[in-house]
Image 1 (cartoon, rainbow, N blue to C red):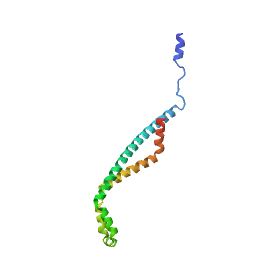
Image 2 (image 1 turned 90 degrees about the vertical axis):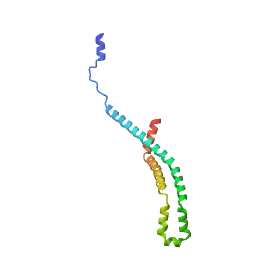
Image 3 (image 1 turned 180 degrees about the horizontal axis):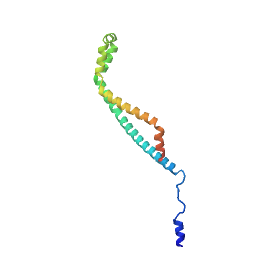
Image 4 (image 1 turned 60 degrees about the vertical axis):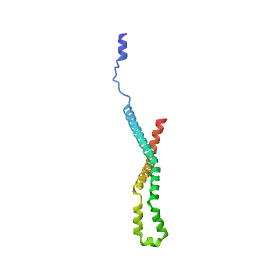
Length: 139
């Protein structure tokens, strides 16, 4: 009886892994890496989207207030009200308009708008990858 247990516990043939096991392991590792990359990309996308959505109204409001306070509308209305004088003095009018522009506010609004456009483009470009992550994660 002791001998029967030895025969059961000791395999006389060398055990070999099943064929295709290595490929399945490598495939599972690659799939996990892609899922992690998709997760990071989704997180970055949502952070950029939230920042840009929050920043656009604030920077747009500040830009509108600064444009109103800068007097640029006065110069533009002067150009249209007396077109002959503005043509003769176009350099002075152009410099006056450029000097009265709120540069910092324009830059901040442009950056926040650029981030919004970039995140939308990123989402549309990587849509298949992001949607695949969401479907695999929640399904």
